Length: 264
Image (cartoon, rainbow, N blue to C red; front, side):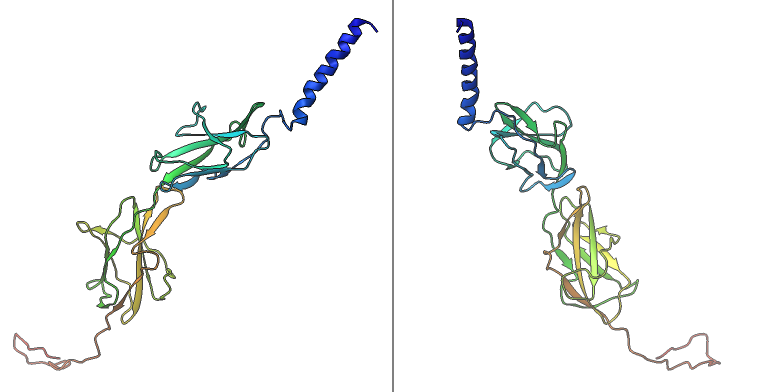
């Protein structure tokens, strides 16, 4: 056998050996497999506290994952290595009512694979539900509230930060739910206490009322119940006056001076 042929055979055997070593050692040199993000979904809302929790499905052959989140859609230059985990919670630093684009990529020695593709960024918004707050009056158990335009029932509560609106429910069923409608009544700022009034109540009726603070700057809108979801207060409206009749002057009476004494 010629030396040149022998040398060619030896080179081929060496190449086959080198290619076989990673396979025998359980090493896969292919790039990470395709995968997808899970949450928050595209255009989702997350609370400022406890923060945005990012999660994704695992990628085959991934050695580690890197995430990136930005306030504007552009090429990310600050990928953060999070190791082999498939979820992470972003710490302090997110801006209230801020929009963020985010993506994650799987990395190994053979290359990089982006979740949902290289241009598959998802968007989320940071919001905060209005803080806990309390109703003021009518206190629970109140009696004889008015039902007319002149003597109407007035509802008041302490305002809270991050609330863009307040809705009131006045119900006749005691089940800690609104079985009528959450109304956006005309609300008045009375120097630290917010007030609204209702003139369509029935006399001699027991009602249950609640108010929620709403932040419409987030999608979907977030809300907080005054005194908690079970903190419905009750009141009873006044009974109408009993029947009565006039005494004098009688019907079609005549001969009175320029003044008359009326009695009933």
